Length: 88
Image 1 (cartoon, rainbow, N blue to C red):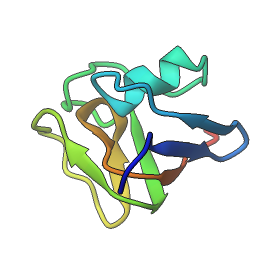
Image 2: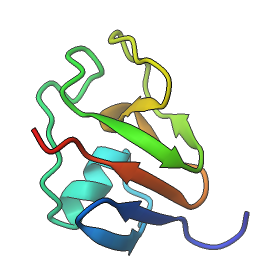
Image 3: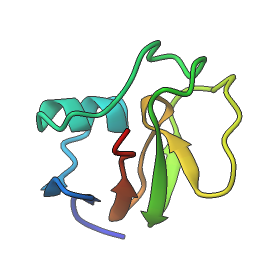
Image 4: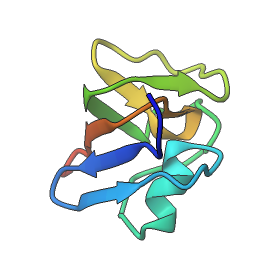
């Protein structure tokens, strides 16, 4: 894939990844209210659902995810992605 990865977020629109360290940092740069706590993959608070696309790990996580769950503090997009942030 060439070009800048596009990130689509439920109820928050679409933006382009600007090569922040993690997906969580990218969401914060866009002022999207994404949940987080530890920023290190320990707690799972930043867990979202990856609807479409692929991400790569930028740091190891100790929290186990299931199925299509990803931790935004531990990954970044490889190409265009779509995620769903829980509405809790």
